[in-house]
Length: 144
Image 1 (tube, one colour):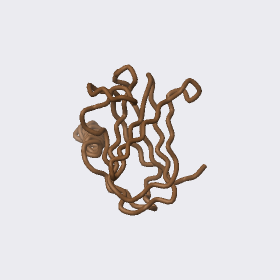
Image 2 (tube, helix red, strand yellow):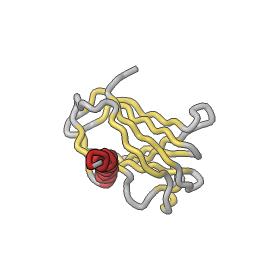
Image 3 (spheres, helix red, strand yellow):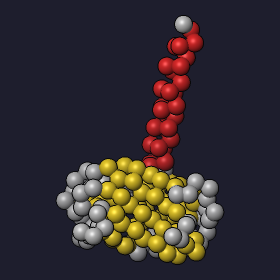
Image 4 (tube, one colour):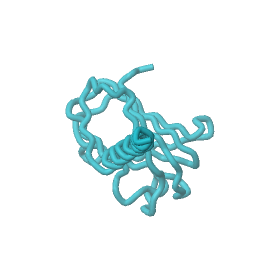
């Protein structure tokens, strides 16, 4: 009987650990080195927000994710999957902004592959209508 109690606790503890790790990652700066082992690296959250942008719909007042690239990446691909009318706003080191949006052919998917310089990137996941939809953002070094 005592053994059964522990089997009930173990899944709850594991779920708590994973949910708190995800929350910590989404609110903090993630250091990313070339050759990272968890490939693809994935993040999730809700799109949209209250801040209206001129080109990227509504985004959150603060970045959904901040990624510090410790070195230049010869190749890295950001991929966003979401429903609604998602946008991906990337604020690069030095202030350059890039807004990408899904179109009718991409079915809510956005990709931004290429060379990425060292520095801090602020990532906003928006929505043209300002709606909050679940999203998954993944980063991979695989060029396929």
